[in-house]
Length: 123
Figure 1 (cartoon, helix red, strand yellow):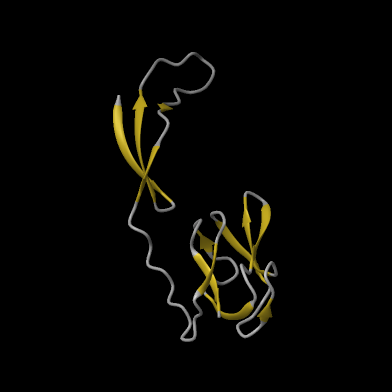
Figure 2: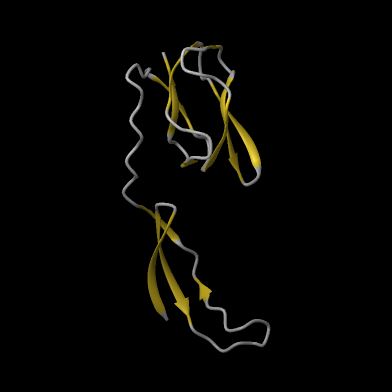
């Protein structure tokens, strides 16, 4: 057995790989133990706009920014879609948690995002 540490999208995993005889089904593919996720040092967040607000809109899942629905300065009501992320071929709206005005959009279309990352702020 061999132990490896692998980093995928900023998450660190300790993996144990067994070497074994092939049963003829596939070319000797190693078996990997279930990875135990560890937290890596987070990537430096993008700087928020100068007038960033105090109400955060965070990513509900890891994915890619698919579409930005609102612009800085737009008024939003609680539940309005501010932007949409795509995760596993699903479009997931990220909504305003309360009424306010969009203070900053901290991502661009096509940016990768992690669950919990601040995508925009309201004031």
